[in-house]
Image (tube, rainbow, N blue to C red; front, top):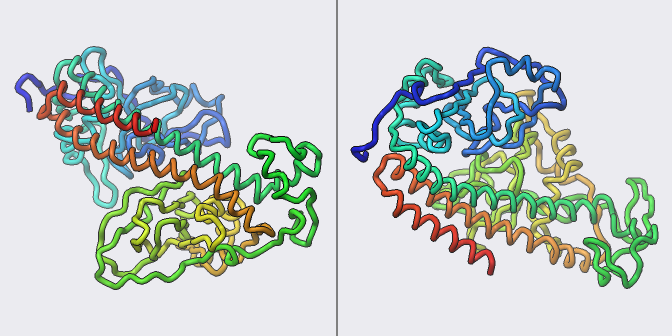
Length: 447
């Protein structure tokens, strides 16, 4: 550590420490978002799915209100997840502590990064107690010794790391937007049958274009819906079972003992399509898959939480493997590869899958055979599949590009983080290097 860095007790560096442990708020179906330990992950706050009533907000937040930039720390189950408050109008739940550094003493972003690595992180974990669930008491947290450079250096370090995180966040938002566009088109064509409905109502006329419906696609769709027993469907289309369009758990050769990319259940996202990076691991037993396959969690509670992925990061000739609790879905030609993922993300399919679960209440599973019976609308022409692929596959290609970029940026951040927080790396050198990398990625994206 640099010699001009001092150590100070954390409590002496804070302007506020807000702790709601020991209190349980009354939940509401809507209102003020409730930040719980479950949604503080990977340095950010995921969209909350719990709320408290607006009328209860002031009474509940009697111990203090969070401010923009305040640092949130999960104190148990799990211990040590860190993020910053991005919206002041939120409520704080149990197992979270909110901290605010004193002006010109402790920069909030520097505190966040310090809690993620180095001496402060080591102290946090070493002071934790518990066996089944480890946690830290507020009194122990206050005693942590924070290595502090000058406030100017703190802000410079936070800026370098924050620049990388900001780019990663922009990429995440871009991926979400691209994924939402693909899901919207899937719903429009195969659930709501919008092109047919627009023709039927005379809104889409030959030679004219509508948003998402260029004129040259006009003859691709019929102009009326018919009503077979299962429900309205475009004329000429048919209701098929999912297994007619998708192979479920297709066999793949992978010899026991072979080193191959591996994904566990934790690697699957609850929203979006991109899983965490695979790790090389010796194959024992598990589900096998390739690039272009969709992975669907089939076990409680992962299925209900939406754990699903679209595999795009593997070399095309590689077989990977993962949890036995995945269902692997692979589109059959001429169905585009991403169709399997989009179906797996669709609400009706997920509801069907959840209803099909069997087993005890604590360990229920969906079976591939039951899931494969789900009814889907199948076009009467391969051209529909081809054109749909022309629309959605480029969206997932962009998701792949920005996700791979983000993985590279995260590796750079994780390399710089301990060196900057410890003072091992000079700020000026790191800043020039980081800004050069980020601007380089920007030029690549522009191309």
